[in-house]
Length: 100
Length: 100
Image (cartoon, rainbow over all chains, first blue to last red; front, side, top):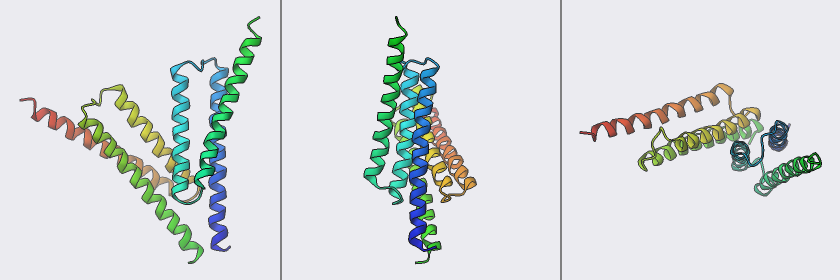
């Protein structure tokens, strides 16, 4: 193995791990919604904020090591925010439908 | 540069960055104490918990990439906890002394 492919492997692993963690956050939010913790609830906000903070720390760490590109790191966070919004919207639509 | 030294360099960088972040947390706690936010205050607890959570996320991430040894990662967190305790103790001793 050349040294380039090793660092490349590590970089790819870094992206993979960040994706896994981002997906875990989406799942956590879904579980919270399913268990009827309302998004207006401070606990929900806190969980989301803390998880986003944790992921941003990981991304920042990977960027500092040169394993993850700064802009791509930002994109991971932005993508996660969009996914969380989708979960919100699905929750509200479901609530709306069941109100009849 | 051999591939080993590259991964070794990255691993050393990972430890350095974790140390920097742990020191930043100690400094943040010191600043909070200096600004008279009491350690009994929930805001203080929350800041400390969130920061510890962030650092543990970074450590876990580095461990998963094989850059940081699991036990040494734990030691970084334990060392930080001890440093934070020292800051607490210094604060209380100072308070005690000025009570006369």
